[in-house]
Length: 258
Image (cartoon, rainbow, N blue to C red; front, side):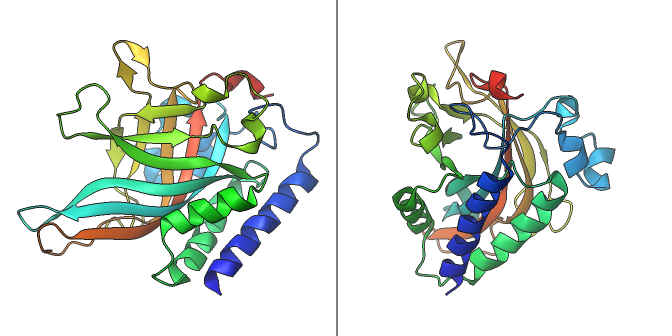
């Protein structure tokens, strides 16, 4: 029932987007204009005092997204949880007023948390791609180090190339980005439960940007996602439900912001 409610509200989000959009979006663009939007208005005072994402205050995002899925962990030989990546699906929330992004994200988090344990993040991905709602943007997951495959490092990747809005775009095969991490800040509300907020600049591979979807990604408004501060059995796996926001800046489709 919770999963049905989750997708019902995402479907309503799609209807609201269509109703609020002044015109049909450009190829690769957000459904509603993001011009004039500043992440500064979306951040709590605690983050503003730390100057989190301050370099983006005067820059409009190309995409504002809701992310639903899991953060994944593996138990190390020392009996501690170590991150192994994530599987989430992203949805366009550009037609929602910025003031509603956080409460809407928390609301969806409640529905996702209430879904039965047998429902996995891959179920979210498969069902979304089957329904192909207009608000669907793409998938977020992690990949091995593209610079040094033996380093043991992993990097975040977002891939929007299958989204409906990109299908007539000649550049759609480049609608992805692989990013590194910087300016990692504990969640200001409950760092024991919610994953950190951070900036994710595009990764350079041999001096070239790995993907053209964005130059930088912001992760914030976390709901869940953090591993429990408990010991574990080495080799065991854990998926922690996560709902948050990603904002994308720059990239090949930056000129669609108007």
